[in-house]
Image (cartoon, rainbow, N blue to C red; front, side, top):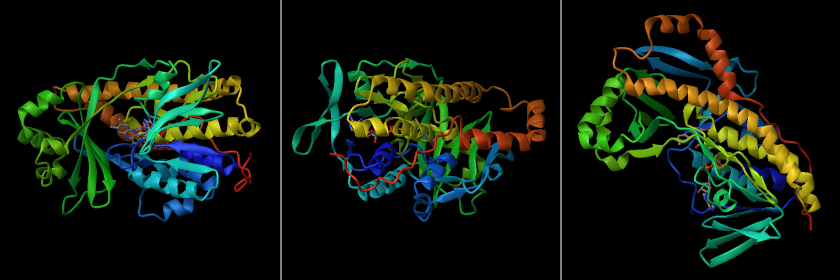
Length: 394
Ligand SMILES: Cc1cc2nc3c(=O)[nH]c(=O)nc-3n(C[C@H](O)[C@H](O)[C@H](O)COP(=O)(O)OP(=O)(O)OC[C@H]3O[C@@H](n4cnc5c(N)ncnc54)[C@H](O)[C@@H]3O)c2cc1C
């Protein structure tokens, strides 16, 4: 969607396909990071987004072994984008769809699923898709697979991801806020478990980490045991865990971390989770997908207007984006080892006392470092601006 908006602003014709009828995908990416807000600001869209009923968060607290501490302080970032926004992903995508609809070259087709690539002389020249009317062929100078971590298009392009084993899965569910809610808290972590509580108005988008493949076993132990486990890991939620009355309210999201050694073919490139599935650690996946889109748009807009994008240009996009993405994935893998400790913990504490004491002393440094890492990440991208809005090339 971001790539579509960026290219359409440059006066190009873009067709965006979405196989679902709407963007209502719960439990995926509720965060809009400072770097994304900066991109929107560059495009003159930030204020319109921030006018929506969203939660702006200057700091993020965590409760570790019962002690609350501020782990991230976005207000240490240079302004004006010195905060994080929590917004359900469908609100953000609806916003982008409405902004795209103002641009003459932007054509968003909902309920249109791409299922194959069109080939001509070893080049990819578009997709075959199905919509309500039947089969359609969409021809394109460049086909971009941004179809997420189960990407069908990358498979059709014979690009195979390399998997990094992740020892955890996440269960997601909604919980009402307690009557007297605690301050905004990213999560509770202790030897009893890890519970995330993302702000969504009067309820939490909540999650808990479990060892990979252990969901069936948890279900067999019953909902009472699950609720008790949540309450003991996050005591302020004790009064609200009763809202979970059925396992249907609890969704298993398998965590993946992988990358494609090669992102492109002639006439084709993959971006976002299709090329590097990100784990939910630090909530940066949406951010990195958007940064790919910005880098790609900057690199290809002129060639696209000329009617052909050499594969060497696509290779340069991979070379530019691969390093920051892989660096963040390495950090996520490292963090997963820590999360693995929660799911295997036997002692009383998640964090040994000397480490907790050290973290207390280093808190200002940790707050600033995490604000940069999460807020901007490695190599944040800025869109090349041009005033071509409204023009359409032949
Ligand atoms: C449990 C969990 C929690 C997470 N939490 C966060 C978070 O808080 N913040 C964050 O930044 N990241 C988070 N992430 C990561 C984030 O969800 C992804 O990195 C991000 O959504 C990737 O964006 P994308 O556009 O590449 O793919 P996606 O968001 O997966 O979008 C792909 C889109 O393509 C559509 N599509 C798929 N196939 C086709 C097809 N054949 N034809 C047409 N359309 C198709 C899909 O319907 C979908 O709309 C989380 C991940 C997990 C697993």
